[in-house]
Length: 434
Ligand SMILES: *Cc1c(COP(=O)(O)O)cnc(C)c1O
Image (cartoon, rainbow, N blue to C red; front, side, top):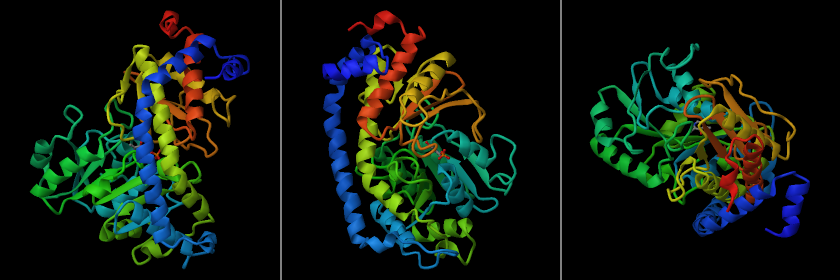
């Protein structure tokens, strides 16, 4: 880092020079990782552009209609492009899918009928999904209330326990759910290759079982996606990776035609399915974001790697570890105390371009089991492909860092989070000596 930049950071951002120097010194340790990230990014960039070309994307696709949205060409092109990128027969991509949880719940409730059983085969799923299923919380309209049956098979040594999964499959088991990403756990994300191996063995035992993947945070971190290796249906959020920071809202569901149709029927009405639904002029942002997504994801993965090495070198446990294959954009850090989690998030918030002066505090966020503290100063509210961090207020006090539309912004986040811990005496000062 140039001296002028160090001066700017120390004088205008009021960072301690030890912190800036420390982060710069650790950056050198991970530069070799960046080459691989760049190669994946380049591949995905060409994959995305080719899909847009093959769908014959044209400027008038960005126009939109009103009312029912019949003949909204842009909506149809978006869905065509998503199905090309994810190598699926069909796709449902809508701005009115409010979040990742909504996309996942829509998929589950579209596919499962009373007395059908589904098994989460990567242990306990994401917090918000537990409430939608009805295992946690006390809400109306959960899957359990509708008579769907549910169980979990935990991971063993961070791997899908294929033997136990196969033994757990009963007469009524219709669907298996795989969560690719870390979520709010302390396990690393599953690689697409690991997902592939599990699917192969399971399908060899029961070919017609539906494999569903929660792909949140995973998109474009590898050259292949779970739907390239046998997943039947997959869902995710547009304010994470595939929206590239430009989508205002939305979710996607991609997969086999017959399955996507059932989900679409649930999302509108049987008989209407995918044929209706206004895009509200979102097509341009959704597609420009998708165009940017491989690059943005690469920036975020580099940023996560920097965050990882800095805290690992300070003696914290990190997930994924530095040499693990990265299959999502999250860097988990076991900070060990609630104070560190909160001060870390304050540091990230203060590095934001938007709402940098806001002070995050733990709150009862809808759908989450414990209080959660969130640093989220995005151009799009709640967008976690932008620089963000969050931590549930529970043992063992992990913080999850993700996003950053540019590597430099991630790096500022690393420096400002560390500086805030340093200022609050939550990091031993002698540890920063290099
Ligand atoms: C983000 C996420 C979700 C969905 O969260 P929303 O906040 O509803 O978009 C689901 N599963 C995983 C693994 C996630 O990371």
